[in-house]
Length: 631
Image (tube, rainbow, N blue to C red; front, side, top):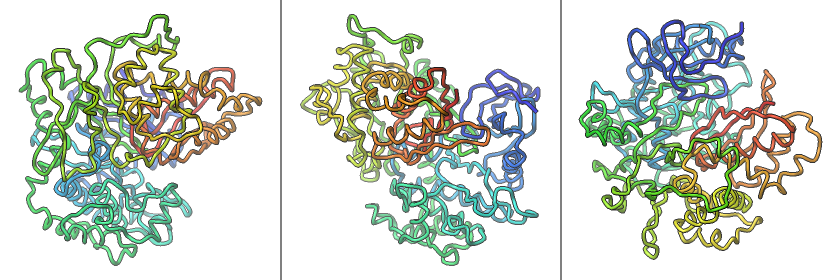
């Protein structure tokens, strides 16, 4: 049966009116919608139309709804409805206002003890209910844990998402999702028995994953991380369990002992039930109000409450509305959430909230191209209305020139959040725009990009916007990075700190581009400019198929970065997918630039129209980036 693709405005089963797309992945899309009679906001997940006739995928899709309704727990996202309509199979879930734990980690680097325990206890209570119902989650990770604002309570709540690959222990016969040789889950969070597939799984497998999560939220790093998925799984099975202290984090010894016990290789040496872990964590952080308050600071509950009650001035209301989080519900398909839109969040230190400095402070007048500079047709086609966006796709509040003198830039220092190191304003260079830092776990020079990337980005900005606009960007970069740009001395054979490119892109977005999506255009234009000599071999031979072109391309593109694992796959429907794993350090501007570069390379090689669709990782500082390429 042919199904229509879901698009905003369509009506689902005469009940739900689709609004904007808020997430998606290789298997489907997630839309915000409204029940037309009840007026309730919901989230609806769809299978891609071309996958909807696959009985195995449909079974997996609907089993999530069955699992959630079998458990029925307040800390698990609620499934309201499900069915098959003219848009294909769908599941309707509650609509959540907030952000994933993955997003919180991307912003804060790591959490303090009360916030970490405040996340873990509700997750464990949900898992305890699931395990007692005979269901194992099997895919615990930060992206599947959501911190939501509950207006009825005026506080933050935690919801566990995505039971799409859950295992039902007492199901009759083998599940199509658990056939021999198939391992589900995200490598960093697999239990040893899940990674090897040699032992039956039970609830203790999920508890190992909780140990990984606790280690990550407390330290900002994952305990068994390795360059590839295979190497990570090997470390999960064989590597010694690291301590929190070895990552430079000192916590209550009881919490260290809990994490160590959760991460034991032998399930018999772990806690035996999720309830046992809850009781131990409650001894470490015994005051629920303090845990709830710590969670509330992560998603700025005070501002959300003010907005929901209307207790704000008209200007403040406009500012909050333009930057409020894009909400979402639980999304399966290993979906990365759509980028949230928010005001600069507070930094959390113990029980104190410190307002973060403005992430971008644009000049009161928009940057103009130098005389004689011309914009490409691709850039001209974009709207001219300036939209300030950060590298994570966040819409930044409008800053009027009168406001600039009213907000002093505070220096943020916190013993609890040492990972949040802000790039400090250089005292030798007054009036320098502060640059949003990379998350601390990616900073420090450990990740590099090759000279051609920097040269391509810089030359394209000059060509399209003029040298004066580019010089405005370089003038506000940290001194340690600015000189190479200023003197045009970037060497194509040299590796440069990723932070240099990140600073350039962040400032250029605010001061010149005014539209985050234009980084995709900049990537396209680079193929005909600085990158041409690098990729021209891809045009030298006749195109046989897109897959072979992408495979040849990855051998070139992958050498531009010291991080990321590139691979090409062809799906059962013939769609070609380019997948970049371990791409965590890449901000959203860089991801869009890469997609534009790939798209233009494919277009030139094929001599015709090529469509590249991002299917996963449309968010800065997430672990993967995937896109489909079709003629």
